[in-house]
Length: 199
Image 1 (cartoon, rainbow, N blue to C red):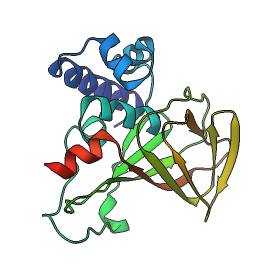
Image 2 (cartoon, rainbow, N blue to C red):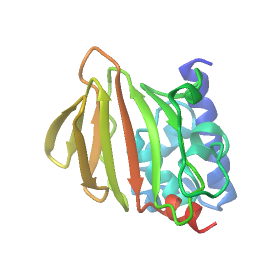
Image 3 (spheres, rainbow, N blue to C red):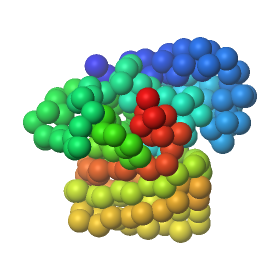
């Protein structure tokens, strides 16, 4: 599946979730703390979602982020004391949105609060706007280098480095190198994570 068709599918899913929740574009934009024009572009498949905007929209809709990018919840293990994601289990077919490939991996752990995701970020041609939302985030870069803009600071985070910050601080990421970067991302305290844990 090419990136354009993936953008179109993600946009269609977003529109469906928004309408099912009874939100206008402006309602959802206000709740997710982003512009209605940006949401409109995403729904039409003309713009991609950053991790920040993905989690903000999922939080506003009270859904798991995987439902937007994969068309349904990621496969879950029964409630257990731990969850395990093997490299071989990720598959060869990520959800591609813009310059990012998302691989959701979550487990139904009692009282889980974290939403983990494996992400590959290709060299970025256009940075997404900085956004803030509830919760906190941890990113552990496995390979390459990602540049985090956190408010007015630009921080390069390379393989083996990690960054932890409040999601309320406006932020975005870019890959300003010529190589793909890989990271594990944890979003903690988002409405989506709490909603899943309480279900």
